[in-house]
Image 1: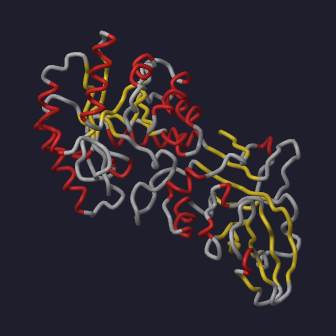
Image 2: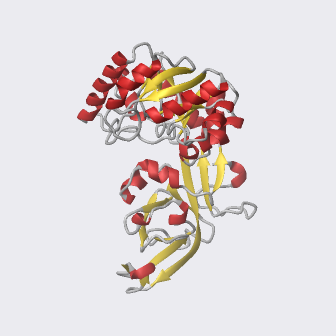
Image 3: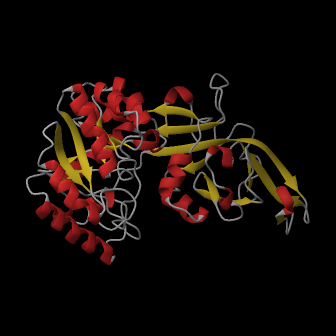
Length: 377
């Protein structure tokens, strides 16, 4: 934590900071994660997926930190994200739009030096027409569906695309790519099926470089790497594979302030709908974050926070702006107005919170709200 904030769990936060939640993003850990993945991939390269505002952590500071440490390839999902990020990076940084372009965005994309990932013949034709109208050679990436049925040229469109490429001098194909659907489950047979399909595509479209691996795909081994991998969750400290030790450094910590501490008697109802009934006299603390701040309602009665290493269960329903926790296990007076409890940190990972909420770490990370005071280390 930053010393100027005095954000250590158990202290009150100075009133100069107008927030009751403190989200710390460790850019040093982010860079070290990228360096580790790059070392695993060498001589291939590691891009950075910074879609959804860098998984909620801030696309501009994240991309700048990675650029300063050698990353030159950045992937977003939507064209508007690319437009927002483009001024923050030098012109030698390549920004790719995974979803491709909506009709009418092509000329702005070309003028902005942004590279579309083309997913269909329709997107291909629109980009080719733009290149011809501008009398320029425009770069693009071709994405193929290898079995996920989400984005990319389906098998039936490949012959027509191959024929079109023979006469498309106005479009420069930088590489071809696909996306792994089950890379976080290393033993799942779909990984091998997609790898075999990617090999067939490489034969059909010979001469083009390949980008294939996402975070989990990097750990599947060199056959999946291609020349450029596209890590996302692993950069931000999330586990790249389920059920295995997480090799990545944590990037995010989250501490939330206590609003009130009180004792409730046996039989007292706690929270909306009286979802929890006190089985004995108990001490309850209310903290200043809820589902509007990205802490899912499914944590009700299942999740927990930590204070000085002690697990404090969530009781009652998670509210929009507040959560009640059982602090009976702490000495009386340990928590007071302004004390900070740990949501994410050394005692509770993204995966822990996701498990308790019945979801995945991606959803927890991308939902963290903007009412938290954000500090970049």
